[in-house]
Image (cartoon, rainbow, N blue to C red):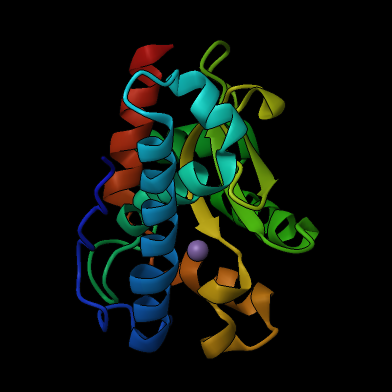
Length: 199
Ligand code: MN3
């Protein structure tokens, strides 16, 4: 059975960029919903079910569980930690985007390209090691073959439920505030180091 990952900070720790109300809705309602439905699927299919088949045919609930489980840890409480990429992350960004400013603009532009629900990701190709920014619809995730089997290094949820209470229809503002203020670059650095060790 899948268990919700504990929120690594309090519901109010992302204020003023994300309200406690949004966090309660997002973690208690939406994340719990994906987790419960994914567990219902597991129960219905039985323990002998082929995981590959489960995941491919039931992306929505399993993807919802997986994407959110990553997302909570990609964020840090307001005012804690650093607001810029650390050593290995910065090196990778400079190599593939020239500098952080260009990376940031590319990320924000990609968020605008995603019409409707989905996610924006900075991903690494596990074969070539090159990185890029992509968006995925609904609860799809970068490891899926449709997206070339990439590994997610950083992702932001751009579903309406992630920002509507705080930003109304101003999705670009939400993405910008999260990217500039709430990214847990220490955790992203760990993901970069781990991904590079697999290449
Ligand atoms: Mn969400």
